[in-house]
Length: 217
Ligand SMILES: C[S@@+](CC[C@H](N)C(=O)[O-])C[C@H]1O[C@@H](n2cnc3c(N)ncnc32)[C@H](O)[C@@H]1O
Image (cartoon, rainbow, N blue to C red; front, side, top):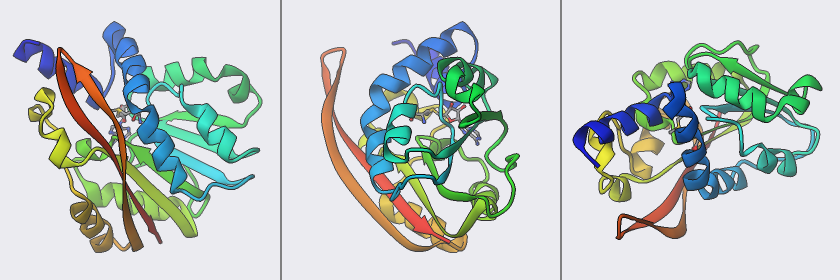
């Protein structure tokens, strides 16, 4: 890939847009499904919960949430208008039934009532947070007392080998995230790592791991 292509890919991963953004949404599903499943596995999902996902991309991985929390009420928030439209299109029937809703907004200002959410999760978005405290304060506002937050990501140790990360990615290890959550008022912070299958691209093999950090308020 040329530097221009890498820069464009990094921009699309940050905020998918335009014709290429639709393809990037599908590419993310393929590469991130295991991390999505691993993140949900630490969220203690149960039937009938109210769940918020921040940065859901194109909403194509909804079956995992619905499988783990039958009858849940799900909100998805993303600041890419394209990803919100794709999510609605990909889940039209459930949106029409009022079980899912997708919102075009920034993570630091979401159209959700305070103390409304049982479980909040976000996968592969922390790299792009410009003001983590503003976002974590918003998460605290919408979570119910004892609500649970799970952040899913790739650790810096592995991500730093991807050529596109030099274009605007902040990378983290578990202790960085735990500290960030603690200074922003979250408690009982735990980090988990799960090995995934290697990713092979252009004859290069990359080790892949899910890092999930869970916290409560
Ligand atoms: C790399 S994609 C990850 C998509 C999906 N969660 C996955 O792991 O495949 C990041 C997504 O989060 C959204 N996003 C990033 N930062 C955000 C923010 N501060 N507020 C709302 N959405 C955000 C982007 O628009 C994009 O859809």
